Amino acid sequence: MKLNKKIISGIIALILFFTGSYVIEQEEEKSTTVTNDQVAVELERVIDGDTIVITENNEEKKLRLLLIDTPESSTTKTGSAQPYGVEAKNFLKNFLKGKELAIEYDPSHEKMDDYERVLAYLYADNELVQEVLVEEGLARVGYENGDDLYLERLEEAEQKASAAEANIWSIKGYVKEYGFNK
Image (tube, rainbow, N blue to C red; front, side, top):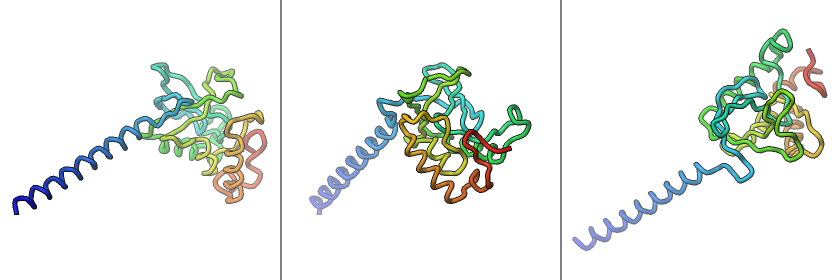
């Protein structure tokens, strides 16, 4: 009887040991999702559906999400918020909350624009944020040069959102080649 209890106790101890090791390995994998091509950043605030403020290496910077355009959420440029602008901003805020963020530069683009904003792809828990916004119908593909890393991927997402008439695509004639119809 005592031998059986020792064997059972040993088996339980081994199970707990391996389960604990597995959980630790999973945590280690989760905390190192940034790849060699990516730079870890922290979110400071969301300005618009396609522009945020990040901290990279203890330096605060504005980041303009590459290859997408969302409707304006503020009245500064357009006099009033554009349809789905506030929704794009709020979606982005909620989507990024609590996630590990990283950026990736595109070798075919400048790293900064004329407004001193970083131009990069944004990842949240290793998911391409631009693709998510386009899939949701909250952004259109734009500002491409034809040699972009993820252009084809984003164009496919845009075709699906357009076919489904998701958000910005639900208003006939709203999405234009160079922005949104007023």
